[in-house]
Length: 509
Image (cartoon, rainbow, N blue to C red; front, side, top):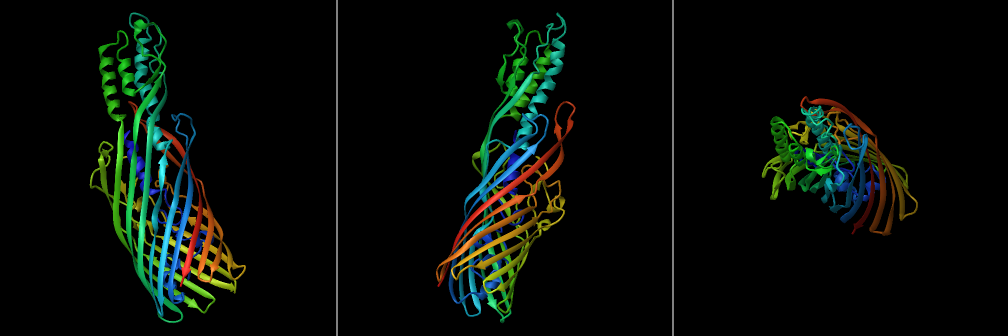
């Protein structure tokens, strides 16, 4: 059961709380982005994140933007491992982020703009496992065939005619089900605090240099307890002392089997030894752990303006090296699975973005954007199996992740604009990367919304986007640790979708 904790930690660290952007980076950082999806040439206040060099296009004065998004994500995994309670079995999961804030502030004077940004640059939600995942349940499901194997030879021996046996099959190997109380909740949030300077070199070119301070925190709380199996041996005369049909801990059932009538001493010894082994493997365990780190991201940018018709934004973010330090609360280290003051790699990759905005008509803006994440050059602390051994990204990623976005914004009146956008994300992970705990899928996102200028200096933005991920599949081999380990082929498929609702206020004075 200790294996489950490692698997759960891998899931919380790696996956799921990314809603827009690369494998571990959030790019959905404003309500205007939600309704348009292509903001890489922005010259509005959210340019603090998307195109900081473009802030030179703002009017002189102070500018502020406050945003929040509410995010819902479904994550379904279907697994056909033959010993699951029902096979194939679909495991349903959800990730929620009711509060996903973003704040930007700019002071523009002459050729200079000073800016600050705060947002969840990674993570931002919580994952709760109420019904588990295949990686959790397959370890429990293995109890059934393992116990069956250990008891089958004994059933055969006792099925012999008296006096060598009972003269009937005691059916001690009739293990019918498994169960456990598994609960874990994980949260992950990487906050970014960004500051920088934008400078207008001439009418065509502006540049930016800045730094983001990143604070990272993961938490894990939960337990694995009450691991049980259900057994239904033969209903025989009490003289044979067969265990009653019902629910047992695995160890207790083997101990009960060791007490049946006239069992040879060698079987008693083996059953009791196996019971002691299972007591350890299925013991209750708790976790209450935090992982924290800080890191820095240098950022460079450039903005090219071709009159008032075409604007081009460029940005490069350097890799953020993050080594998370572990803190165990109240000694709840899941029997040593978490080690106080140990470290876990969780880098954020370097990223290049480029965008263009074209005023097709005085009231119609067309935009396009491109994002490229240098995943292979970072270390996500990815593990391939339950040993906890980490491998470098180039072992599990064939090509870097990229996105292409298109957007349109149309001014219906001087106060009201409507917009829509499309974003294609293309992952480059290998099949070795994919697990039910951390899978990356290519996707298509559609967004739409409105902006309304309540006052000349106050605008509200409302948007919604929906992401459809392409289903993925992986074929793998499950090792069943019977006396002679069995290699069982399994197919696992992955599905996700996500809904984002954003609201923001932009204020200038």
